[in-house]
Length: 331
Image (cartoon, rainbow, N blue to C red):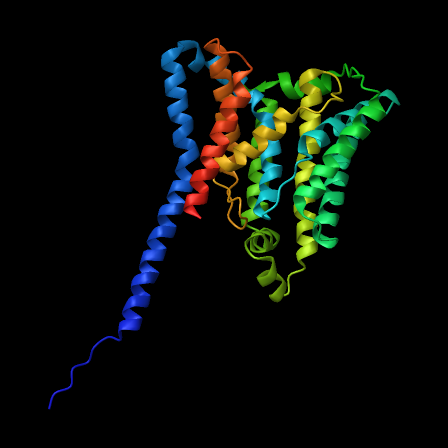
């Protein structure tokens, strides 16, 4: 009698499912990496054909400079979204940082100290958000919606609604000085992106942050201090709002007490377009950077074509919902 050895069906099925899952994951990773760059190239080609000035070197450098603040805020928002959260107070924090910076300047403090105060302002708002979200365990939407109103109110109270001029050449150089034809503010944004990429993907903290975003309960079971990691993530988000306040003040030449919600919309939109999972645990850094540049190019292209600025929020909103819908399908 002969005995025929066969592979158990369960093992074959499991291996098949494993290969299929890996192929699906690889396909998803490829899509996530290529979606924003491909969209940016297509957008540039289309607007370049419609208006040759769009792809001129002065136009490109100007658009890259204009994208510096959205890039910085998108980097901060990436850390909040990676935790499966959101920070609605980003734009208001930029305004408050700008106001505290101008107030310090009025009191006679050195410019470097004033910039440090703007950064500390952002860190403080992020720390408050992170404390209530992580330790008090209030939903991020409620906390940051409340802080949006509080921070906006503080900005108006401190400034009395009046901008303060800061005629310092060292500050304006951030938005006017060019290195190799590229404005300094854009180079600062890219440098921050490189640093935060290392933080998120080359450090233990970054690994823990993505783990918490993927599953807080599993992270807690592994011994991670979930509230502390959320606190740190939101502090990074706030710090980027502080940097955004410095760049905005240098660009305008004065404080900006009124909250510009367009910055919040662009930051969140860039994160979504960049392939960061709204469900937490999966992120990129270069994706939101490309997303912020794409949105800036889109807005500038519409302006060059003579489209009213009133349509920009409409178009950006449609793009965000479309990207989020695609991401929901991938999930």
